[in-house]
Every structure is written in structure tokens, then in C-alpha cells.
Amino acid sequence: MSLSAEGSGDTVAVSGTSDRSDLEVTIVLSSGNGIHDVAQVSVSGGSFSASFNVSNLSDGAYTIAANQGSSSKYSLSVSVDVSDGTSESSASVSNRVVESTEETVTEAASVGGLSLTVSGELGSTTIDVSGTTDRSDDITIQVIAPNGNIVATDQITPSGGSFMTTIETGGTQWSQDGDYTISAFQGTASNYQTTAEIEIVDGHVIPEFGVIAAMILAVAIVSIIVVTAKTKLSIVPRY
Image (cartoon, rainbow, N blue to C red; front, side):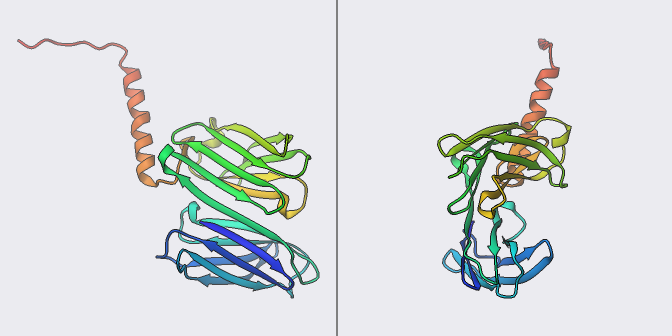
């Protein structure tokens, strides 16, 4: 799934793509003051679109979120700025899964600003975070659990327009199963603030292959425990 927002005068045009057409896409325009507008659109030919009038909105940053079903793969958001009833913001975000390598990759990008890529192999206890920027200021990384608690932070100095770090997922703070949000901040401008999500189960990375992947991981962990417990193996001959 992908989502883009393009501001032009008092209108923000929203568009995107999806590989499924069985569900409509709900697009919500909101801010810290609540929900300002909602659009529900169908996917046609793999794409969807809508538009919001921002002429009556107060100055500030607004979130445009698109949801299609309950999976985080089909839940994206971007941020746009409104000033004097107009917006010239441009932002996009995409979410994809690389099945051939059993790796989940979430990409979030703001045009002309900060981009973020989050990835992790099936069953691993590390999250790879990388991205690009056209600024040299330090980038703050935060990892937020499904319950809203911040479980990890990092500060990175970009080099040559790019940055990267690795986050360990072990520990009791990672005990909650679900989608963890990785946020990257570089200043206060909306196109230098972006987020991506990755699913964690039992402290391990789970690509978006659904319940089957979680079951495979659980069986693998149990098998390791059983083999480890059998420190002695005896064979009783038959007579």
C-alpha cells in the first residue's frame, strides 16, 4: 500500500495504491484537536484518491491517515502543514513486504525531507533502521510499543545524506505483542518527521505473513527448547 498527499492552495489531494480491492479505504484528516474530515473511497485499478478542503483549518500540522482493514500493511499516514487556510506540503509513504527473503520492510518517505526504512528478518531480535535526509542535524529515533510506551531511543548523526542504526528487541519492555512504531525526528518541520511500523511477537520480528508465520516461529522456539533440554539421549535396543 502507498499513500501520497499534495497540497495546492486550499486543497490537499490524496492518492495511493493498494494490491487489494475487497475493502474500501478510509481516509481521515485529523490533528491534536480531533478529526476534521473523513473520506471513504474504493480501490479501482489498484489506486484510490480523495481531496480535502483546508481553507477553514487553523494553522498547524495535520495527519492524513489511510486504513484498509486491520493489518498494519494497509494502515499508513502522512503529515501536512496548513497556514492561512492553504497548504503547499507534499508527502508520501509506502509499505511493502519482501517475501522472497522472509523480511519485512516498511518504508516511509517525505518529499524533500526525511526518509525512513525499517526492516527485520523473520524471527530475529534486531530491527534495522536506515534512511536519507538533506539536512546534517542529528536524527532522534524512538520506538513506541502498542501500549504507547517508549521502549527504545537513539540519536544518529547523518553522514553523506544517509543514516542507519540497529535496535535490539530483547527485554521485558518488548513483551507486548503487536505493531511497534519507529519514529524519526529531525527538527520540527513535518517533512522531517516520519514513522514506520513493524510487528513484534514474543520479542521477535514477524513479517506481515500473518498467523502462519507466527505459528512457524513458535514451533521453532519450542523445538529449540526441547532439543536443549535433552542433554542426554539413550537408545534402548529391541529384543
